[in-house]
Image (cartoon, rainbow, N blue to C red; front, side, top):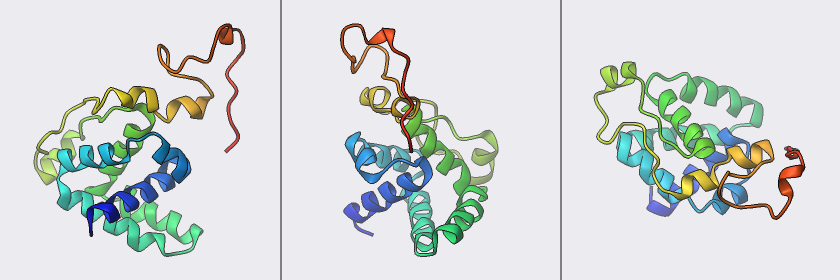
Length: 155
């Protein structure tokens, strides 16, 4: 799989697991950074295993693919924690260390630990649009905006 194909597949996987559109995912400007983060933590072999598993699943109908994703990715001892880490990364902007059981079973990951991969991660976290708010201290909404409650967008 080429580098651009890997990014495209990572974006497609991210769309599936975050419920945000490809445009919204790409609009963060973090797809390449987040894929590099996952590669840096678990290595390209495991990242590619996740992406290839997703690619095989994505060709099925929506109902079938959702169930297969649940079984083959999230139900996997190896891929499940990595996939959940990717979701947290998109929403919160932080990579959380893999569980101790994962490290014991599959070996310590090179750069595993809890960290923020880039300063933009906080500002671009999907948490903010999901709750209809903005990140404190960034992306100000304008004078007096604090007086209005957040509006949660329709999905």
